[in-house]
Length: 461
Image 1 (spheres, one colour):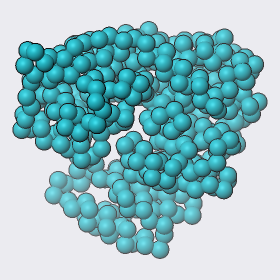
Image 2 (image 1 turned 90 degrees about the horizontal axis):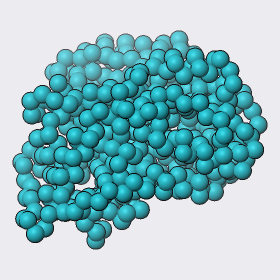
Image 3 (image 1 turned 30 degrees about the horizontal axis):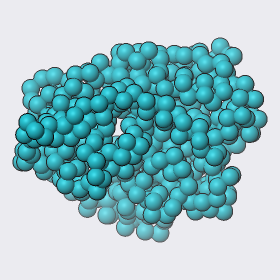
């Protein structure tokens, strides 16, 4: 059993003892604490909170516990049913609600579930707000409504359609160009909510030929749900047979988008954002943002348009904050997360698909040919194991000093930009390790950069 409480919500494996797994008691406490915070900070006059869920096998049980608890706290629940994370985010503002809870463990295996917490803007709580939720949970400082003030419950299953309408209304989504291109598309929705909404989106975009893989929303994931190459053998094999122009793969809550070329090779999740940004910048000059551990290719493409790229600390809430600060026209994360402010401030695979297909239709290239137009970088991920007593901050400070002649960014760990690549060191929040992400022109060079900096760290231990 596992239970992880953090400023971004609570996640864990279903079952076990309270406090050791994600049990109904833990859900009640966390939901109650969240409701207590929302009542204190929300400026929206409504008493509504939106609840959406992915298709996990535990989802129905978790939904009933969370919705009942919110009603017990005196809130009116709008249950939007099986819905993606971006759909739920949009539903909060569309319903003029004061918050929302997404029941999803994102890319975690099927035995996991989680509560992700949204503010009145349909965005994730910031660090200070998340910390306050944890404090309230620990103190059990919540009061439930009396019998005359129990909240109501309403089911509204219209938000998938409203989400699609929002995507279709975007100026840069060219439905006519997509229809004329007559794309043949394959999708892998890993037995979750993507299987509900992506076929509807593609039909509305004018895509007549869609080959579906694992689109039944059973929650019984047929492969590891994280959309990485090592987990996508089935859809890659399907693409190698020919007949399709592109494959789209999403995680269980549909906020990450991976793509596969017509020849069955991975497009590269880091390049989902790069490609969409290229299309957006071609039509909308402006700044871009990604986190420190994302590919340098976004910076290269942005500079190619004479615009400015900015890096944020890791984490969607940090990317969004930076995007607002610099008024970015596009941003996101290298894990396939596209954030397009014209739609909303949240990672959204539907937006990514619609913009990418518009881009592809305008370019008139094969997907592999389009991919070849972008700077070629390779990323490596390593780690250094430490003892619990190690002063990680002091070690990172010494690394920063050692490379003071290079371009150094210390807003989140230490990132060193070299002429031929970069290395980013971050301490883990959950275990005594330093994560080392690096990128260069080849995998060997990326690992070489990581090894060089790791050697310096290990020499300080």
